[in-house]
Length: 494
Image 1 (cartoon, rainbow, N blue to C red):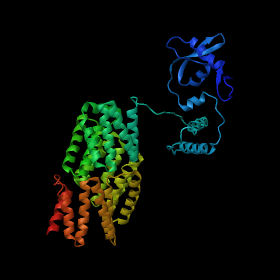
Image 2 (image 1 turned 45 degrees about the horizontal axis):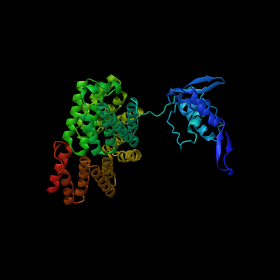
Image 3 (image 1 turned 60 degrees about the vertical axis):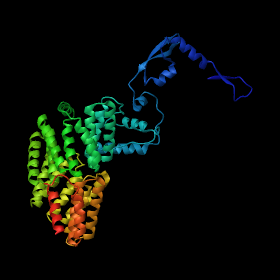
Image 4 (image 1 turned 120 degrees about the horizontal axis):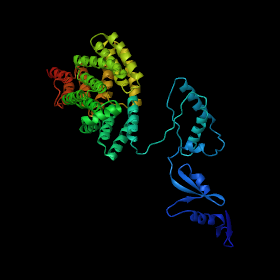
């Protein structure tokens, strides 16, 4: 660019002359009304984003007409179209990527995150790594973030399902909240139903029972058989069945055993009308959970046998594993400790092989309890120690109060009972259950602590504690927990 001085002061009054002034005038002469025309230099800069058409002149291409937008290229695609500067200073990062590639091709696939501030060279690093893949037996795929297209909701839902199953619950919660916001903006009832069901399930796992119930009930309110059939075709499962099953579990935790049974029955009725085997397996699975909570062992055994039979016939490996675990649990509580625990361990291993890690803490607690019944107190405490690490890592709050209570019971079964620590466990279980407003867990913790206090001669304190919790309930008096509580209150009152 040439400039001329318009003042005696050399730092002011500089005016551009020559090409800078002539170029806009020349381009204007090449453009018709409503057209956008750019110079060759600008055209080279924007050709990755805009479709251009050359306009020839006496000296060759003098301008480019902007025809329209191109599909947005990725940074890697843009780099492949332009000269690149020398790549330096990233030898360590490339070596790390090479090592991960070697592990992946050797059968140890994994997910790696490449993070950093904008402009530090993440895309260039990936571009260089891509060039090194030649000759390797791998497929390279590139994706980019979606805007609000029709594919966004199922993509987010798939991510939620993955993270929820893996027990990465805080991430699953964020995705569930995104699903809610997206579905509400779309005003699409089918998506709203899926979103509420997803977030409700994650909130249950986190132990946020009140919020979980709210979302699950909203999802159930949007249920109809027509949309459920569409869901089955798209996702392989009727989400309302899972939503009702999770709602039944949530209602039991909150202290509504009778309402929980009704929700479970609704799930089974819906799946019978839909005639969909995988959804039936889902309903039977949650029915097992509810029978376990209500301590209905014969009914649980019937349901576990039905689930295993269906899952085996339909080749559903996930449900086969769950059915086998629960059959083992029945054996353990019926006195066949070694055989039952062996089958429970096998079932849990098969469940984890499907990638379903969220169930692991629950099943470890059940194994610990079974170990206690079999007189293997040290093994039970070891299993619980393994559980605490996972609960802390995932933030899982469901069954947290019960885990403390089971630990207290095991501590009392030691050759030399640790009564003080057992009492602390029962007290902690009460604190957690009250914070979560989980009345059923609170009742169990109160019964354990009341029995301990009874042994210590604190009958008045024991009765006062248990009576306060028991008096809250308005239903479910046919359940084993409430019947046991009533019987203990009568003993404490005598």
